[in-house]
Image 1 (cartoon, rainbow, N blue to C red):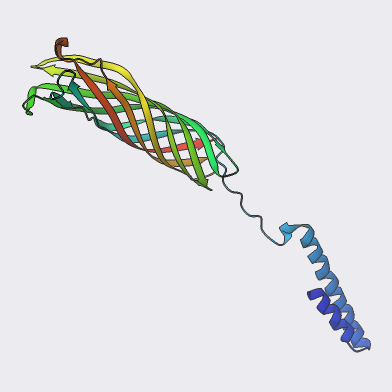
Image 2 (image 1 turned 180 degrees about the vertical axis):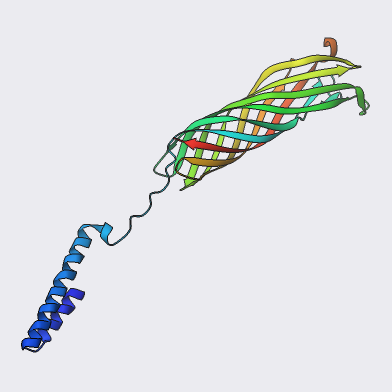
Length: 252
């Protein structure tokens, strides 16, 4: 458009020495502008900046995490559930996680992840008798030494923000000790297996680092083979946990 207007102006200039000189200058300017417009059309990078590429989550990663867990559990006598004790341990844990993400063109992400943690999660619960009153001399100590999980993940990404849900199989090394009238004996010391489900947010701090906030629920069902003092009072353990985790990871 600008080039056409310049050419039109040159046609309207009066003939003469000064007019010819001005016409030559305007034609040269029109030629220069026309060349620039053609080059811009052939190479868009001359006229506009390239749009930054969106973040891609595809790849493997490894990270570290810390968290706080709270149990929601109890033990009860198999033949008479009026006898119960609180087994709701809480405490902190820390460990490592690793996984892999595959991002689809739709923005959804499929992945898998494993984690393992050392834990300091414990609680001492006093048994309650048939009359509903606590029995101070009968105490059950619950301790979780480590936890682990293998999970699948489904996520959706908003560039550097990734929202996910994850679920799979969970493991917890649990030890329970009974104390009756000063005599302490173990009643359960094994690795429990259950299921876990949770969700959270990953945020890409840089092209290689991302942070995480996550909530997770784990249910290890009822362990029927527990028993208290001298095998005379068999009881079952119903063990569940809730935890909140903070993590940071390196993406390869």
